[in-house]
Length: 205
Image (tube, rainbow, N blue to C red; front, side, top):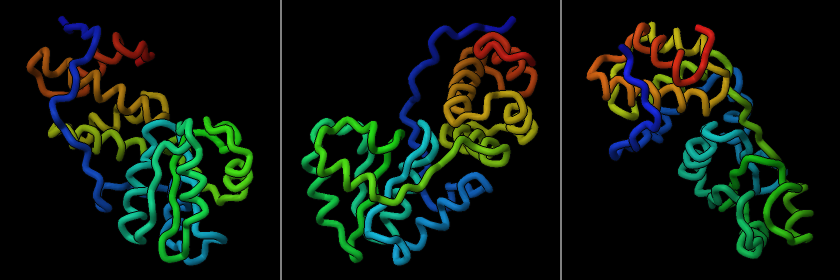
């Protein structure tokens, strides 16, 4: 009988891998990666990286910042105080460009500075959309690997065909399977995934 997990346990100190080799490029994010790899062709030394939760904004922005020396401000859309962001925007140069990450377009950001709003409206935007099939499978594999879990390819492919095509759905599935496998002291297999996700995510499997 499958043990139901009402609340998955908190991760036990696992740290996601954030190297360049750990970032998977597919058709859905290839244009964004290509644009960000060439800051010398940007129309200004500033760029916004926008995308849904868990879409790899921080991973990609961190790679670009490390490679270019850019200043990085994450979750810029949530900053109530716009003054530091305003000064960072003005201080950006070709030698030290500015990268900002967020989830929504600048007109919806939390700050209330008209001068900053006009600057952000003119700033180039790179969008990271929800994943295609190849990227969803890669995200699932990475999330399992980040936790030190060895999961066979058939499980990854089975999941990628059945969960919603959202980055957060991948995280939810991995959280659930990790918790159930730990509680049951079983390996993560297709039968376990089928039983666990049928209950936890209400999928039509």
